[in-house]
Image (cartoon, rainbow, N blue to C red; front, side, top):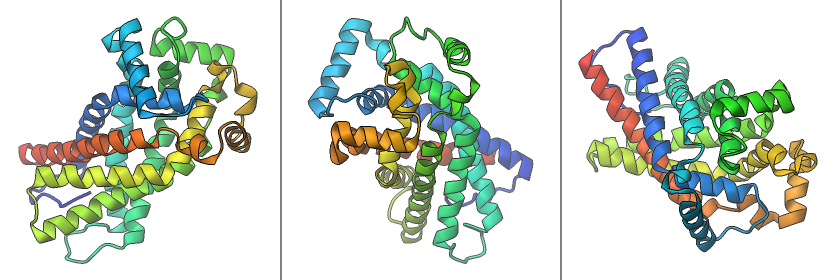
Length: 298
């Protein structure tokens, strides 16, 4: 994840620093793009073709009918998930890197495969531990206030009406997507940052934002169809389409039959190319800045 600070910290201090820096990075990044994220999910789980104009109309109508802060509906669930998710992801990434010997201060170049693997495993680790919160966030994003008034109500209603196992609907599709997404994102960020650092081309804050933005765009593009699939599976129970989206196979078939390949599996990708680089750039830059600052303070 970048160059290590010359300041010496203990292993336990490093873990706490990574947890806090990751939590800050995730919260800031996700809050900044929450309205775009909600709009993207709405289009992903519907049969309506995505257009930039349609997205703008949805956000405008939501603002008029429900108020400004309704654009952040589901963000409480997002924060409840993203704070532990990002904290675990960045911290586990540091641990996986240490295990595989990635970015050690020995002058040797890291294996690209190991750099990718460390990122992928960090994504799998964090996603597995926080998945029910991701599903709850998706449910809140696509429903009206009267259906789920709070995060607690989401968990109560799902447990009562659908059973505990429903909290992991779409999990396999999510993991299949997070492996290339997290692997590519961390790999791209680390590789670009090391290259820029060696060339001394940009100061650190700008470099981190740029490298993170590129990493976000590449990562989103590699896994987007699986993001569509998991969102359909997560939200089908509240959209009245549950019978069509029980498995990955049935979900793929239903999406293809109803919308075709390009429209069905890449709907909203252009919005992701806007929000993805913004969120990932902010996330990586915030993490590195917070981590390096805390290392100096301990």
